[in-house]
Length: 113
Image 1 (cartoon, rainbow, N blue to C red):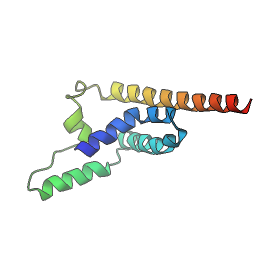
Image 2: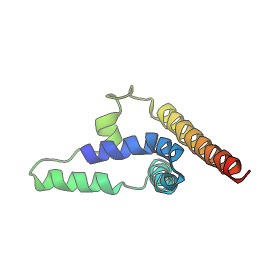
Image 3: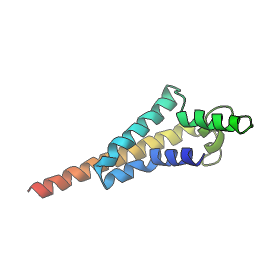
Image 4: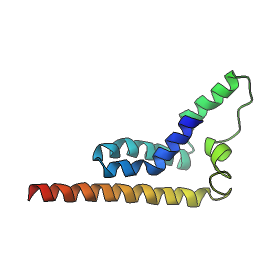
């Protein structure tokens, strides 16, 4: 569960690391694309599958549905707000990417002039 929450935090906030170094942009892009696939194409998250497997191995009944639906929605944001939260996340991700690229492009121009 902790690893899953860390992954979600990285999806939302990982773009800020790209403000320090563009090397963070590609790993963050991969996580963001995977998050979109999970949302849009309903692709099962490997972390959710692993978590449910470990719960079963531990002798308990795994939860039904997604990690976000089970642990996040209704706890970190109100139930039924999934779409607005995803749109806000997309805005944060795209804004940090845009700022990161603009910042590094501007820094290169200053160095070369």
